[in-house]
Amino acid sequence: MAKTMKKLISGVILDLDGTLLNTDGIVNDVLRVFMVKYGKQWDERKANKIVGKTPLEAAAALVEDYGLACGADEFLTEITPMFSDQWCNIKLCPGANRLIKHLSLHNVPMALASNSQRTSIESKISYHQGWKKSFSAIIAGDEVVAPKPSPEIFLEAAKRLSLEPSDCLVIEDSLPGVLGGKAAGMGVVAVPSLPKQSHLYMAADEVINSLLDFQPKRWGLPPFEDWIEGTLPIEPWHVGGPVIKGFGRGSKVLGIPTANLSTQGYSALLSEHPSGVYFGWAALSTRGVYKMAMSIGWNPYFNNSEKTIEPWLLHEFDGDFYGEELRLVIVGYIRPETNFPSLESLVGKIHGDGRIAEKALDLPLYSKFRDDPHLKGSAS
Ligand code: ADP
Ligand code: RBF
Ligand code: MG
Image 1 (cartoon, rainbow, N blue to C red):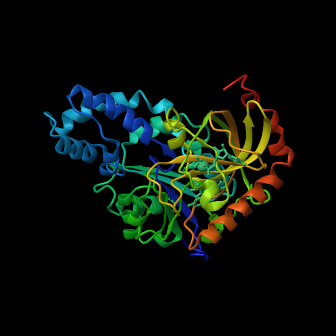
Image 2 (cartoon, rainbow, N blue to C red):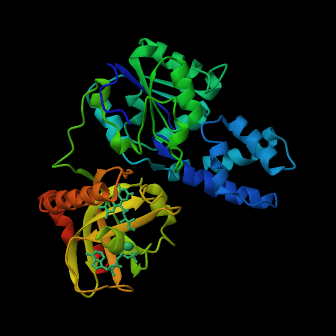
């Protein structure tokens, strides 16, 4: 990851699907239903075949891959209304609103450059207050001769912002987008929307885990000012359930027990929240409410195959509490999950996270959630 300042940037060109909008869930939902009609089963692992493509390219790729008995254009005609019905349900990528508001506030020129069609872009952004007026230009896949990975869409965006390509920064989740941005001679920050893909993004100047990790200062843009004592407040969210057996190494290998929750039933929540280190409050139904630091993700040090939620309660307990009901309210973000050269450095970092959480949770901004009704089990 880039540590130093890259270069001075004057304008930002954003991709929409997968970068600002969490479209992956909806794409999977629609394709699951659609494929059944053709007697097929949608495999979510194939999502990488369509990310960043134009609708027609994506349709052609799927028709071929699944050997569907229809043409790509037929496929599109049939599936387009199914998608349109879902645009109102799309969630924002965490940090999307924060980024747009921040750049707008500081009058940083912004453009939207998406391979999808103009009408669907307009429809998708219409559900998000203040977005449309934040973009000085919107360029769609059907408004250029060659879509991404061609640089055309980005060059057109720069022109409309009256900026040189080299003064623009592209923020993109997809590989075609990253390649297009680089071919246009722009700085590119990749925010891969699919897990465990960062190794494919060699062309990008910087690969970040989510928009929460974007550091405008590195690009000569005004820094975010919402970090407080090493923490970033987030829209609080809840999760809960009985404590289950985890990988069996928290206490044994690290000396840091993590009370694992079953991920079954929470797959939507898990895909909505980027991996990373977070903190908040944890309630054990029969014991009380405790401060908590947790990781969400694949634990890069151990390279797990499943995304998990691993809360470490900042309290010494006499024994285990498997099977007990654990409820969490997650109130802030600390850092991305990373790999470490040694177990000691991982353990050291996690203890640092614990100290940050411990201290931050005394701030009124976070301490008020100790009384969240979800923790008492009266609401969920
Ligand atoms: P597992 O892999 O099964 O999660 P760990 O070694 O991570 O095993 O230990 C976690 C278990 O330890 C929890 O499920 C819980 O029963 C117990 N435990 C004891 N103290 C704590 C604590 N402070 N935070 C989290 N879990 C704790
Ligand atoms: N695992 C990692 O591989 N990388 C991390 O950056 C990381 N950060 C963590 C932060 C906290 C606060 C906690 C509680 C755990 C973290 N872990 C991380 C997970 C750790 O590897 C995990 O608890 C063990 O794998 C036990 O299952
Ligand atoms: Mg554990």
